[in-house]
Image 1 (cartoon, rainbow, N blue to C red):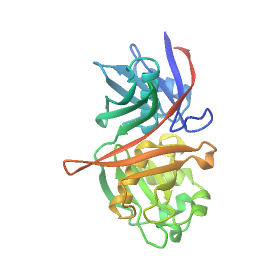
Image 2 (cartoon, rainbow, N blue to C red):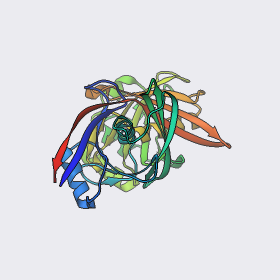
Image 3 (cartoon, helix red, strand yellow):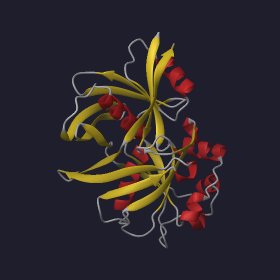
Length: 298
């Protein structure tokens, strides 16, 4: 059996930047075990497996090398860039085209921005934001991240870490200085045990340079699902902009997250909050670049 596979860097336009994802556009004949084996063989943080439904609607499943996850931001960006590039989605000359993905986190809109029939950005709608509790016992978290309790917060404010989900449950961890963020030393075993106990995928650590900043610096760790560190995480940054807004740390509804710097794979992730009938809709986006396409013989 021949399976066409793409490797796509998300949240970048650079060959050696962003976060790479695997994309498999048609999974007819693939079992769950086969998809998991393919994801393990490709060995990227996530691989997306797509089944076209009706026009501009797609069923998508996401696998890490270890397990299936409900949603993945950077693999979504990679997927819809590839679908547009390969002609599964008809281009527009200029404007925004809305298509839909059906995931284990529900039906979510994806906006594809075109200029001169070329994809310039892709925004994915996140799940409804959910606050799942602040971290009361901070010491196990700080120990697993290799920092002191005093390093946790925003500037001079004592802001507690909190579990938030816009599709996946993450600990949003504020770090007071860029130096502390850059020098995080993760104990994978401790963090995996903590993640399992709290029922989260991992930790999204961030440094906000100033109140109402238009940029934020981030790092993401999820060893429990086989990801030591990730260069770009869509769902986590969606949770982050919600966290910042709820804690009145930013006034604007738009933010750019720079992630992957310490991995030498800088990613630029656009985050925004839109109001729809008094409901906050979180969207995360960026561009992508197709790096490799080929055939796997299964």
